[in-house]
Every structure is written in C-alpha cells, then in structure tokens.
Amino acid sequence: MEAFKIDTADALVVVDPQYDFCPGGALGVPGGDEILLGINHLAERFPLVVLTQDWHPPDHSSFAGNHPGSMVYSTVDMAYGPQILWPDHCVQGTRGAQFHPLVLDGAARRASLIIRKGVHRAVDSYSAFYENDHRTPTGLAGYLRDKGVKRCVFVGLAYDFCAAWSALDAVKLGFQAVIVKGLSRAIALPLPEGGTTEDAAERDFREAGVRVLAMI
Image (cartoon, rainbow, N blue to C red; front, side, top):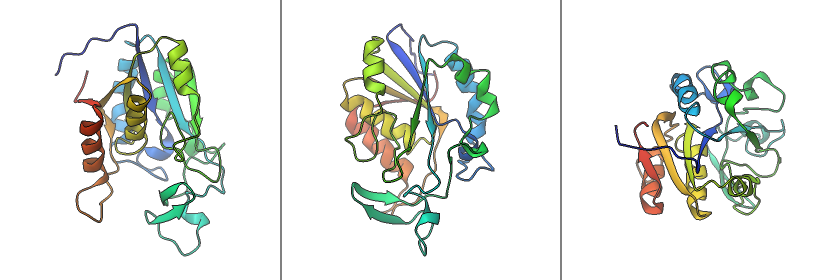
C-alpha cells in the first residue's frame, strides 16, 4: 500500500453512496456495496468529510425513460454536449435516492456538508463541483476553500463517472486530487473506439495529474 499521510488541509469527498448505485438498485454498480464499510473507516481519519447525493426530478432529461424510443446507455446531444441516457435513478424523495444504510452511521454521520446534484431537469451533473455544462457550480469549491482545504480525496460511485469528473474538476480548480480505487467501483461501459469508460477515466487521470491509489 502506497504511503499516504492525511493532514489538516485534506477533505474526503464520498461520491453518491446511494441505494440506486448499489447492486439491486436502478443503476447498480457491481460491487458498489462492498466499499461502504471501508469508506466509513476512512471517514473517521479525515478532518473534513463531504458527501454528494444524486437528486433527480422524475422528468430529468438524462433518463432514457423520458426519451421515448431511446435505449438505456445510448447517447444523445444536449445543449451542453453529448449525454448518456441512464436508467431512471435517484429520483428525489424515493428510496433509491437515499444513502445506503451502511454509511448512515459512518461517513454520512461524519459529513459536514451534503451536495445534492442533478437537481435541474435540463442538465445532468456528474461532478461534485459543476453540472455537466461545465459552467454551473455547486458551491463546493468555495466551501472547501473557506475551510482551508488544499487536497481532495475521492471515493465512491462510480469510479469512471461521478468520482472521475469530480477529481478532474478538483484539479482544474486548483486542488490536489487523489482517487482511491479500492474504495470506488466502475460502471465500465464499452466505448465505440475500444476499451471502457474506466480505461478512459484512468487516461484522463494521468493527463490531469490525478493521483490514483489502490488504498490508503
């Protein structure tokens, strides 16, 4: 295990530990529930913990169910660029949008802030920092700066989408970014050019300077 020292300028960002992203959920990530106890243990070691929560209205434009005739995981063009159409998931107020019970007495209890994302029907939001238009902020960056955070450590679901976009945006915003692969799980959708979205995310990490650790 690579040496990593947690200090007072670090924040742990736990991405979307929700029912719908765990096995049996509407957009279940394989093994998504297997990482939650480990995330709880890690959260106890950090001075600052933030959780994100997908929180979609039922008519959200990223839902395949709101595009008659379209297939799940197909791509459509939105005003802000290409958008994958997902199974309807994490609908506001539903069980699927709730935090998984394994984190309620752990990471969720330790959290000083919960960022809800994907709340606007016309634009999706993978990143903890921006909606998918890459312009509309969630407010997380300002909060972290006010708290004196210099480095963000990302865990959660999914490694190749919301966790990845969050880590990449963190670097763009001037934070150091670390993603713990052992406490994340990927959707790993196949790409037309070959490989998967997990491969593409790791290529982006290398180019952006996001540090990937197996575990800390």
